[in-house]
Length: 338
Image (cartoon, rainbow, N blue to C red; front, side, top):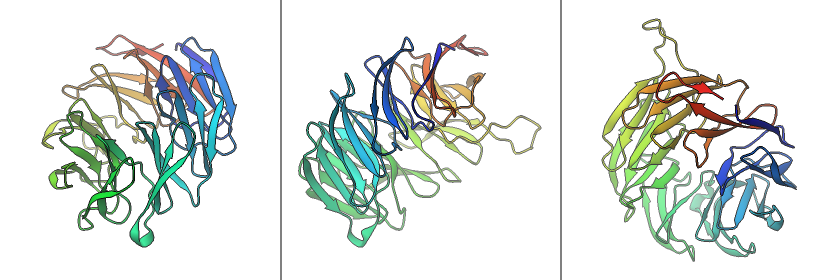
């Protein structure tokens, strides 16, 4: 254990990391913590935060379903606030703009001063719960209407929209690969899709056999956990399975099952960090999926793990509202939490 600090929250949303600071928020306050364990600033919130802080150049967006606050990242001073017409969804910050669902609308704000830039309404009133994603001036949204829509990010003008209701209802955890060639998205049921960012054509699809809670797109690969009992790594360009690591045997061979995975899988350096619901961190090699360490954390964790600039230094939140920084040593090998 490197250190633990007591925040002014009881229920922490996932943390973020930028410029040597841990940024987090909960039902009461947004906070920034230095990596030496001291708190840099605190800002009381009028409404609870439900999503990880979203970072801009010098601003941080703290978003909950009932309101949002945009703060100066350096000192936590308030830049502006906004309330939803209905309820905010998960946000995206890109190129100085904040995008997020508000009921059936996708709303865009200036991060600098909160100016409302545009709104795009989903026909039929489907709600936008999941964050859009952006690439090269185009914004992609997969609301609950079975469509994938590409918008001009600056104006909200529709560039194209395709009906894929036969394949999905929502699209979740969308991300474009670094080379811009594939838009990866989770379907509402058991599939992960690779889509063409130019027109929404399905380039590949992978059936995980059960609901995929979330997937990570990182350095040309896609990683996710399936409740069928596997962590799976795919080639993001082709959808080909690179490897899979067993997490659950369901009593087949007497082996010990992992607990369920609700935290998003994260990556840094050569490692994947997979946190299960028993506060056990599984460390996998990104290249081949081999589990090289299993760490029983000395506290009950909220379902998130956040890497820092140091590939072996990780941020957790506890169920007591604490922020904890842990250094993982001894990799590869059995590992230990310090």
